[in-house]
Image (cartoon, rainbow over all chains, first blue to last red; front, side, top):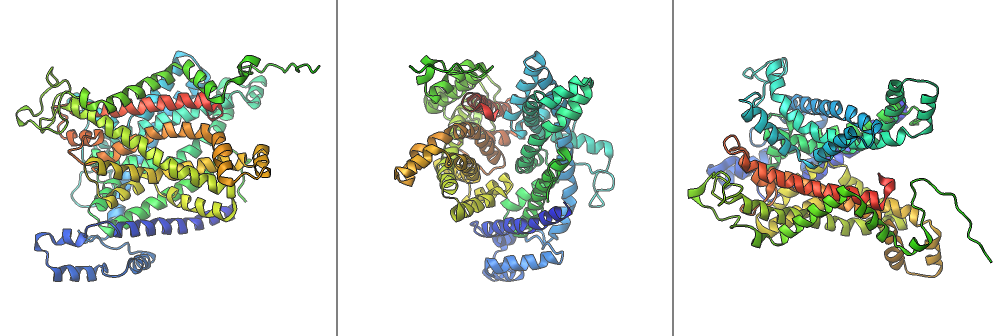
Amino acid sequence: MRVWILRRLLQIVPTVLMITFVVFVMMQSIPGDPVVALLGDAYTEEDAIKIREAYGLDRPVLVQYVIWLGKLVRGDWGASILTGRPVLSDVLVRLPVTLELIVLSMAVALAIAVPASIIGALRQNTWADYTATSMAMIGVSIPEFFIGVLLLLLFSFGLGGLLPSSGWVYLPGTCPTMVCGVSLWGNLQHVLMPALALGVGRAALLTRLLRASMLEVIRTEYVTTARAKGLSERPVVLKHAFKNALIPTVTVMGLQVGFLIGGAIVVETLFAMPGLGTFGIDAIISRDYQQVQGFALITAFAFVVINLLVDLTYTFLDPRIRYA
Amino acid sequence: MATEVELPRVVEVAWPAPAARSETPFAQGVRRLRRSATALLGVAIVALLILVGVFADALAPGSPIASDHAQTFAAPSWAHPLGTDQLGRDMLSRVIHGTRISLLVGVSSVLLALFVGVPLGMIAGYHGGRVDTAVMRAMDLVLAFPIYLLAIILMVMFTPTAGLIGTMKVTGAIAIVRIPIYARLVRGSVLSIKEKEYIEACRALGLRTPWILLRHVLPNCLAPIIVTTTLGIATAIIVEATLSFLGLGTQPPTPSWGWDLKANVAFIQANAWLSLFPGLAIFVTVLGFNLFGDGLRDALDPRLK
């Protein structure tokens, strides 16, 4: 098992390298020049050449990538072309915001989906089941940003500004500068709507998947056996059925990570949150190569690590699955 | 005289009665689809949207791009049933014309992904060996990307524009990120089908590979392809709306639901309808394809349920 984990961890390296390399090449092939944007009206050809030299932008793409990689190995993620700030510190400042959003949205998703799917499967073809499946169908068909807009209309504008429509208040201890709002309650107020917007869609998808696999599992013989030997309904459902129903669900949720990252970008944009999503989209649109590389690196890393965690979850859910 | 052996009846499995034996799998699928009320609702929504998209010019009360500065932020009224936006453009006309863009991008990006992904998957699965490895590694490369990261960078590379060209760029970007899904799906089906005896018989008869793939392999992996395609259109429409929402889809003045929703978010406090209607349009369209796709899955490939 340890060897397997080690091998999988090593496999992360080529995947992340490949993603960052492809992103690097793609970004360089984008028409337009960040130096032009940087210099603005004061643009002169001599200044442009100087800046290109300073940032190594005059070198061939492959050389630039190797230089970036060489710096990365030494812990230097480069500096933004437009702001001059080190990319790593920007990423570290924004990471907690996005992590909080994603963790809370997954918590929302689980809190809705687990009871909804269990009730739906155990009371199949009753009004409770129809309600759960209809709500789930509606949930998978609404894009995150529209849920966000509906929440804004309800909680920010409809109920007399109950929740703030944009901005951010940091959790105590995570404020990156001297001048930012820090409060647990304020943070909760700011993160609630984004987490709901991102979580409801996942909840719907999870409910559909979990209900379908619960329906399959509760008809298996071991569940009948568990009931026949006199176990009460609770352990039968939770220990015998639910745990096994989680296996196919975890696979699909692993595949959903790519969509979750997109969802985070959209939700952060809508609620003007200072997270990695807004950092990434701003960097890509303004062609800030170094920042884009930082964003691609952290996203690719998260993507691969989550997929590894998904594989590891199998061994927990089904001890028969062993990785040699 | 040979008598037919009485086979045991299996509960909930439609055992073909002698008279129904001539029914093709397709006809069986249609029959099952017609029994599902939700699937029919999906079909009705999709059919209605296609009609709206095709006859947008006739149905829309006005031009989706003509602005009227005397009529900005007009509330819903008889003259403008869905109100007007900050440029005084009729929202109903924009929502109706937006149907065209959403359907066009949703359907054509999935078709494009199909036309590239299906042959790649078939060739990889059928030939195996080095061809398989090469094709599937290339597909894994695309799949290794978080879908939105790739779609966003592709759109920045293509430089978003307005009009038909802009729509084609979005279509291309979404198709590229969706190709591996079809290639993997088809390859998986082909791997099992190619071991079947009827394929061996084809080879023994000396049929050429393209013929075997088209006439004998493809029809047998159609069911999952059709189901994934229908549900894929729903996903593609969401991806298009999301790209437009981020300002990377078809550019204005071409009407696009995602863009309209985003552009009007700043004004929703006083004019809630502005973002509500484009959002509802996206929701109804995606719901239609999802209901239709779910129904098709139950009808064509119950194992996938």
